[in-house]
Image 1 (spheres, rainbow, N blue to C red):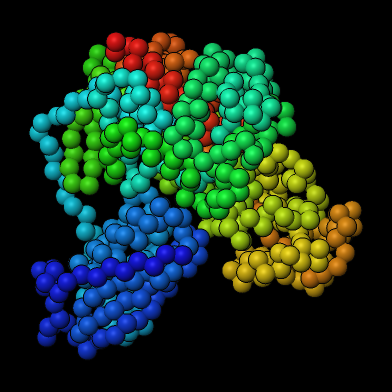
Image 2 (image 1 turned 180 degrees about the vertical axis):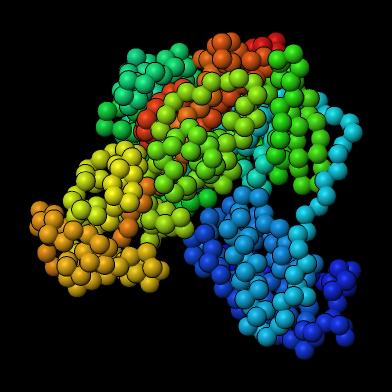
Length: 570
């Protein structure tokens, strides 16, 4: 929970043209009033201080939304509300739900104060963007400030004197790395010797082939990832990556890949949005002088005679052209873009997106006119609850502690025994694309959390199995047989709807082993490279391959793309 106070001097309020006066119907309203609205994870609570109708301060007294991600809204929205006396200020990019919750909570506080809201409704405060006449020029433009883009930038800073700019459309860096567990697998490194587990190049390729169930994978790219991984991982480790050989786990039962996670020796309490792993990598980038421009959305690739020569950018105040000798796309996936999910993964349209707000498929849309190929199928996902709670926190994480998970027919459909990533399609294949997690008296340690879930409307409680079955429309007879088979006997009983939740996309732009983007004839599009989630379909297909693959492949392919650019620009 964070407490942030924003206050604005009276002079600024007068400048905004909103000082209290005879025309202000709220001139008799004074005091501090509390308002609440639903945030992404929990209610956001604000205290609003009003003096003779003027909003003097907005204090966010409770915020349990994702750190870093929600902070950009908490640090901006209250300030602009005060400065403009306007409860309709624009959202902050990447923190839409938190922004909306703060504005709604302020409106609720003003209503509680007995104020008339209309004087505080002044519409969008978006700045009209000006077109810069002069273009800028750099050697390399990296589109996306997630792990893949930052890893590429680090590789440039380490091994070249090229001028490089990272363009991130959101108000914060990290992308999907901020909403994942922060684990990264590694091979062929000193860490592998310490944990006494390693994979050969052939074993790594065979693993991704097996997980893709016969779908083609880019063996040369996987081999390149193998060759690059140890160098990248070891450099991150030397730079402060918070991992240890004392805390690791197996990426997948069929793999020989150790995943090192950011909860180093258990000392770091991981929270979504607060990724020690990405924060450590970003700190390395800052130390190397990497330039990252936030709130900078790339709207178009500039081409000349089939070659990419730069990008067009929109930031908070302007539009401009950035000429570049090479462009690297590290813009992430498309799980937040319903149209692209329908187009490239139609079987997954009923799944709930629960990844970075920036996963809107920018790289796919930017390259549509270039004749690129899309390879790979399926989506990355996991079991979860609602769009608000997902599978995190005291409520969301309950999905992993059920005695059994049944479908509407009352049958245990194997979710608990399945590898977590395979559960996505398993749930989608059930009636109404859902399961119901069941808990009984043996889950006593979870009682407080289950009661919270009931209070939040996420779970249901019943004294009998019959009553629980009826509340969800479950086949009672089959449900009772399943309960008996799983040792579920005594109440109280709880049920929690378990939904398919997206954590990323798999279909990706086809590249070669050096991350050069290929056209329909499998020829490299001059000056264009891609890495990270945007190219996952080259490495695995069907379902998310393993823990540590998202972070690892992103970090390693970012470096591979940078190396190829450096070689071409020698």
